[in-house]
Structures are given as structure tokens and as C-alpha cells.
Image (cartoon, rainbow, N blue to C red; front, top):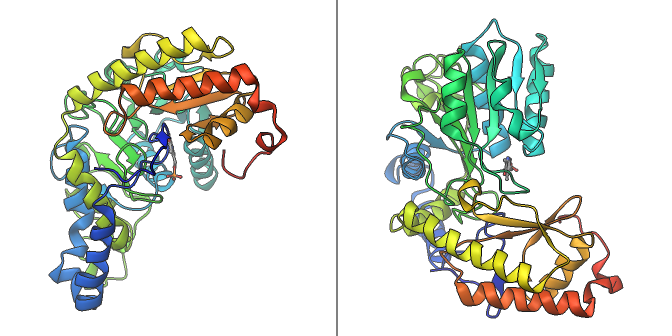
Length: 389
Ligand SMILES: *Cc1c(COP(=O)(O)O)cnc(C)c1O
């Protein structure tokens, strides 16, 4: 179902998923059968205006969200800002935002920007991930954490963090960037308050594909959209001069005109997910990951596992520390095995069962072993850092 170049072993679906075979026809159909023929009428005739919600429901379904509680659009950085701003407004007397030192930097940067903008004495705490639970106290306004650590793959205990936060009157914003499409998530049964994530990683909707935001249905009438765009208005086409959020609906978290071209690619990617059972997927991911770790530890003793050894404590990528990790990854890529590198010394491999099998995993390790044995990574061409690592 994916169009992956011949001979490539793609172990980076956790960063950018590969192109579904159905993607070219989907975007072509958007261009020729929608934009070209309908022009501005497409907002009605092709339902462009509500695709934030119809696609949002399909994305939400992958994380256990009830229909009407998820919308897509914008980028994940923006959705983080939106969710944290909305969460803070729910506990106006508190000033502590709790995250962790393993969080993806843009999440922390967006919160820093929000704190500067609010200028109300907010403090962002970033303890080590394993100390988050202990630091959830009655001072905390909101906890903002990423379930799966982008570097190590370590998994937070969603239920434990939510239960503790709720017991002290705090909320939690989950970043599910490395969870959605990687493992089962259930925002409803865990009683999550907010969740955000992107669709270009495990969901395979293409570079820059729209992000999503989930808000618990119990909060939909109270959350204040800090980014109050006209798509979130109660009556966008009344063109009122003041903002009134859409009452009781997730629509209030919409902002402005989304990319309908990008939505066509998301739609094509979601058609694949309609046939995937997340429990089966996780089982396959664990089998492949365990094989990958076993093979690397047997053949590549220079590499040290940087992910939790217990597969139930991991997401769907596996990381190894290696002093020459960057150069080694470049050497691997030159041989058609695509992973990535995260500073300072992490080689990261996405294990995505929709398009990888045991042969791919074993073959990748054979190539890696050869690079290590021959020290091919030491060649000058593998030392130069690219703009994107
Ligand atoms: C990938 C990722 C992002 C990326 O944010 P964009 O706005 O899409 O660039 C943010 N947060 C986390 C946790 C991620 O894994």
C-alpha cells in the first residue's frame, strides 16, 4: 500500500511516513475534480468547510476519541500552544506548567512563548521524565507531556499521570506525535483532557500534513480558544465584529482556512488505517523491535540500547547510542537503510509494521554491521552535518 523506492529499507516512518500508493490519485482528484471544476463552490459542494471535523473524527477514532471531539488543521506547534492556553484558562489561580526534560523542544518553546505573551508569572518546570508523576501537586495548573519520548521511545503512563493530575485539580495536555498510529491510545477511557499530535509521522499523510487537537467532550463548552479565528466562531459567515466561540463544539478549536490539498492526502492515508487494528499493529511492532534489538546486540557491539528494554515501556521506535552516530547514520543511508540521528549521539529507527517485515529488519542490521566492521562511517563525506539530521 506504500510506494517505497526499490531496495530501500525505510526505518524512519516515525519521522515522516512513506507515500501511500493512493496518494497521487487522491491529490490529482482534488486538483482536477474539485478545485478545477468547483472553484469556490467546493467549500459547499465538496464539503471542504467541514473536513476539519470529518477527517478529525477519523483521526480521533485512532486514539479512542468520540466523534465530535477532534479537529485537524494547522501544525502541531500551533496545536500545542492552543491546547496549553486552553488548559491554563481552566485553572486561573495556578502558575505552574509541568513538562519534562525529554519533551520535544518545540512543545517547550511554544509554552515559553505563551508564558511571555501572558506575562502573568507562569513557570515551566522540566524535571526528568521519571519524576513527572511525583511533581504533580496542587500548585500545578497543567501537565504537558509527550507520551512517547522522541529520542528514547520511553513511554509515559498516561493513566497514572491523568489520575494524579485530576486528583489535585490539574489538567493534562498529551502530545501524541509518536503515539498515534504506533500503539493503542484511549483518550476516552483514560479521561484525557487535551491531546494533540501530527499526521505526517506514523499516519503517513505527507510532509506538513495537518495536526490534530482533541478536547474532552466534558470541556467543549468551557474551553476558551486563545487563537480565536473565524473558523472557530459560532457563525463564521455572520461576519460579526466580535468573537463568539462555537458553543459546545470542537469547532471552536478550528482557526482559519486549512489546506484542502493536504486534507486529500490525509484522507488517502486514513483509508489504510481503516483496516488496521491497533492491538495487532502493536504486537507486530514489538516482534519486529525485539528482533531488531536482538540482532543489533548480537552483531553491533559498539551500539548501546538507549530505549527501554521492556517493550511495554516503549513506543514504536528504537534508539541506540553510538559516539559516531551521525556519521554512521549517513553511511547507513548511503546504503539505502534510512533512519535518523538525534543529538548528541542517538541513532533512531522507526519500526513500522505496515511496510516492514522481519527480512527488512535483519537485512538492515547486516548492512549496519558491515559499516561498523569496515569503519565506513569514518569517510569524510559522512561527517558533514546536513541542515536536517
Ligand atoms: C514531531 C513533533 C513535533 C513537530 O511539530 P510541528 O509543528 O509539526 O513541526 C512537535 N512535538 C512533538 C512531540 C513531535 O514529536
